[in-house]
Image 1 (spheres, rainbow, N blue to C red):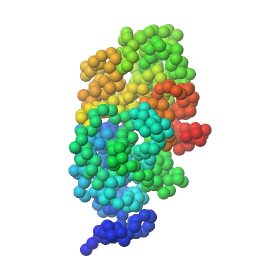
Image 2 (cartoon, rainbow, N blue to C red; image 1 turned 90 degrees about the horizontal axis):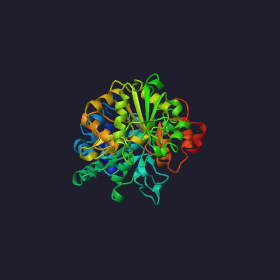
Image 3 (spheres, rainbow, N blue to C red; image 1 turned 30 degrees about the horizontal axis):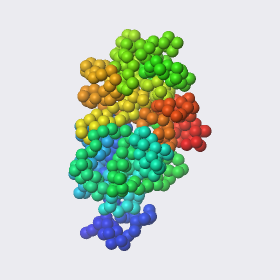
Image 4 (tube, helix red, strand yellow; image 1 turned 45 degrees about the horizontal axis):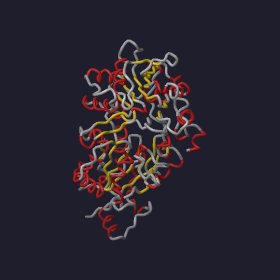
Length: 480
């Protein structure tokens, strides 16, 4: 007794069945669902766990209609207590050990990635599972960018890396090979900044490993758009709405500045987003009543602002400022949409210790920590600030990098750092166009070589709920 699958495999091995089209034969000899391991890139926060659970339930429900035995669906955040798991590479030995024998593919997806299981099976069937495959929807840089350490400066668009929102896949032979590499050569213990680019660089291995193979059926189209007809993956067309947006009065905004930027950067905030904040204070090394700025008694430092940031955390809990649920700390060159932040925060529970923004990592392969990178804006629930300060955690020097010290403190407390790709540590031109095209961004950072007011008006100025598929506004979409 031989199953369809065995015959299909042997015929394909003999070259009898060529599975290049989505034909009936393809469907007949497609991979068994048990050969596919799905990993949802989930996060340890109650809202994100709910989102990931919904995605998992949907995958299992679809699988039920196709097969008796369900596929393996794992939630990334629950695989171990290792903070570095979200950076994927430290996880490869575990994946190789657990699934190297009986599986063919590991498919990674984000919690908002919709999967059409049937179509995905047919797509994977087009690739020989015994070879090294790295599959995804390719992104590329238009110009060399700081967030990729100016890689491929001569020709930035040559290197392709996957848009995680479209899902991406590794064949098991590649997983096994990469896992051996991770075991034999310790991962560099430094910064994790843009994970999708860093994973692609590691796999490519200066040309010794495979390039990303573009799979047109892995899409970031909205699920209900006509273009999504042939897609195996799509994105939910609406960002999740979790009830009423939080009010302006729920957010206290702290802007870090210093005397030399009072005339250069502060006016940009006043012309763009200051009016959307109800409670906002500027903290400086010099009290200037015309702005007004508050001198917290911490001298300005050229590099990190740890002393200033901890003084802000203490002030937030004091009676000197209104009692609000949320604290937003930004730099004086951060551009941010407060109305969009109000919508996003409706998804989070301020009675939990929430720390939200663009997540970076340091030394994740060797027991390091995650942190919210400061320039894109750091959001803390009151409970998070209470726990941070009660822990006795403090700066080792006034000019220590505040965002990294906070990351170390949170890690020591076992409190999660929650990532939102809508916050950006760099300028719009530092991110791939196709990546920004399916976002309604909340922040960008830096005034370098740009007109910050024009950037704010193009990317961040509008109503509470823009729909990414319609463009941020009609004129923007054509420029994208």
